[in-house]
Length: 477
Image (cartoon, rainbow, N blue to C red; front, side):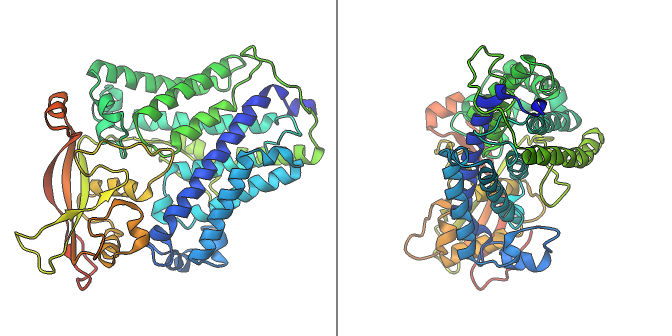
């Protein structure tokens, strides 16, 4: 059945697979560096306690068999090594079945981490990586021509990702409809990057053009992905350019990177007038049967995301099955007008008063010191920093992991401190810590020249009252 494969997508498949392997590599390195402190045996939200509440059926994971920080390290480092090997070309150097085993192993290991990661892994790009990773198992390698059905399933994934994001905006915050959302977004987005200050200071008419271009890219262009070539390639190119614009204007972990990588699978290099190596054109019958079976599975599972797309109560980033297959996606259905940041401080004074010296903990990515320029860290994902942004949005209560975080700082926990940029108590842990809520805004051009500050901040109120190790841990506001 020659119609099931198309050698013209050979370069696109190669770029897509290597790009996805790079994303896997970053994702596993995030787990290596952060998971133990966030959700390990003594983490902020320990996995063992979570597994006692959640069944394997609800959250399939290898860690239902056994969890320890050492085993988590084994899983994460194995994923790191395998993704690095695939990135280097191992999956193309082995037989097809072995290539599928490598990709299946990456999917299984990462799914196991996601399904026990709790709030720290509750981001849409986690499900996106799981879904893309599952489809890639069946995409073949250098020994076979690219299977057309899987390529179309990748287009379907990219369509849902872009169109879902466009619809949630159109149905959500009215600033998307009056084209004013970017008056605020560059300043209030979760993790600004080094250029976000400059994007925020662009003229307002240009911000309106940005929003209009976003609507065109997410609501019109996705339909072009299903058009004949070269129109599908043009649509993919528009998606890639848009994602590059988002990459230079903010830190969104690997969301924009994987979206651009998905778009490369749509590109027909013959439409660009470039030579395409003929390579092997055969595809084993057993592999073709698997491709057809996976296609039927995705078609059946697509009922739920399609129903979500047409629903007036569209959900963002929803998974409809525990394997994170055929999900719904979306981002920024509402835009924050004012930026609030939770700043954690400590003091060596066991009975702090008005004259006590409080020192701030500095995070790696989130705004803190107003003089510090927003850093670039995407596609790496600083999970605690992202959750601190959500904490700033909580107006009525402290996030449940805030008190455990404060306790870790009071104990001088090394794993937790490694998540931070600066520990103001390098010798002895503080006696008391507190959290305060500040309003942050980007400085103006004049303020920037006069003070050297990127941010202006004003104290709003206490977020977490001063607590020591002997304090009651059930602290809420």
